[in-house]
Amino acid sequence: MPTLPIVLIVLAIAVAAYLLARSRAQRAAAREGRRLHSLPNYYGWTGALYAAGPALLLLAVWLVAQPVATRMAVWPVLEAEAAPNAQPALLMADVQRLAAGIDAAVASGRVPAAEAGDIPAEELRELMAGQGVALGSDVTPATRQAALRWRGLSAGGDLARTLAVIGLALVGAAFGVSRAKPDFRARNAVETAMRGTLIGAALLAILTTVGIVLALIFNTIEFFRLYPAAEFFFGSTWSPSFGGGSELGILPLLWGTLYISIIALLVAVPIGLFAAIYLAEYAHKNVRSWAKPMLEMLAGIPTIVYGLFALLTVGPLLVDLFGRNGALGVNWMQGGTAVMTAGLVMGIMLIPFVSSLSDDIINAVPQSLRDGSLGLGATRSETVRQVVLPAALPGIVGAVLLAASRAIGETMIVVLGAGAAARLSMNPFDAMTTVTAKIVSQLTGDADFSSPEALVAFALGMTLFVITLALNVVALWIVRRYREQYE
Image (cartoon, rainbow, N blue to C red; front, side, top):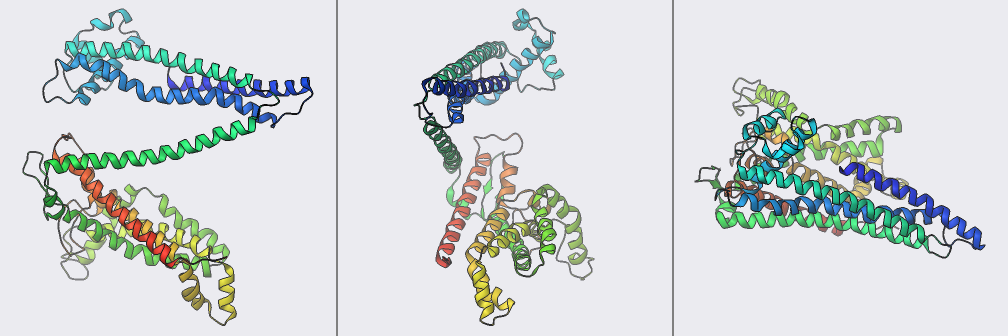
């Protein structure tokens, strides 16, 4: 049975357990002439949690473990016939596609279920082509046998999963209903279950972060086993080649990342901060009511749209100004893709990050500070400059650093607006690229993930992670150093 019907059945059982447990607790209290320890709803929630909680947890674990166990059971069928340089993941992907194609053919009635194992190879490929699925290898006897075994194990696992999950839900519902007695501390049980759920969610987020970091670390270590670390960190040439002879120096990519981010921040920080000061300190409430949402709409525009705006509008405009035949009569810009193009557009994209956060931070400054400054004879501008901004400085620094992190991690605007050239140049009208853009390019296409040209993407990601972490540490130090305490 598919996952969604199982979930719906479990939820239906949980609803029934809720009603039965609540009703049983009330009847028991009336029969024994006693008061319930908790409100009736808590007894119902106890029954529902016992019914749904363990069953859904088992379903989640089963969905993760079944494909792994199936692959381990099917791989020996392919291992004897696999080529020495074959990639198990690709072979198993073909097996899964073939098994899905056979299932679809049987379900549609084109092939009887009893004859699923006797379909000729050419007919199998036609069936797969009819479903718009292409196999990466030929349909060999081992592939066919592995696909049939995959079908059998998957069908058995699905049936066992359905019976186990629904059975556990029924058992949990019966146990939860049986505990619905007047002296049962249902509220405590529900609060304990909710606390466990919250702890589990927090642990899941932490473990996800740890998993991402470990994946970066292990693949980065593997890369440095194949490519010298000194050449990676201090090399000034970026010239990957999957045929061999690559030069993978990160310095041009780091320079392009920092250069574009600096230009973006030079655009976003003044405009965003001045807009936040106006909205918080000077704007009438009617102006603020429509101006702030209009600014925040910039954050909802997809980055691909910004990239197209850079490519089709900003780039040609800059060429018209700074190109060979431009209005200014200089020859600084050879094409529309340049650091300045990406930096300007990225700065526009970052304005709402700075303005919205800074506006909220400025509004959080106590009004008593403003009143005291104005009472001492300071003007509104002096109050903003000498009282409000110093008090809001830590938060504003956090907003700027958030915008910087957003700029460092941007990809689409760079790809479309800055070009793909990795170079060390001070000219802002030259085409350059960034670390994130090269991560995408190195992992795009039929890359051999055991080669340094593919593994370098993880080294680039690890470097970017360390830089961002250092940036956050500096920001934390600044916030703690200059933080203002108010009662």
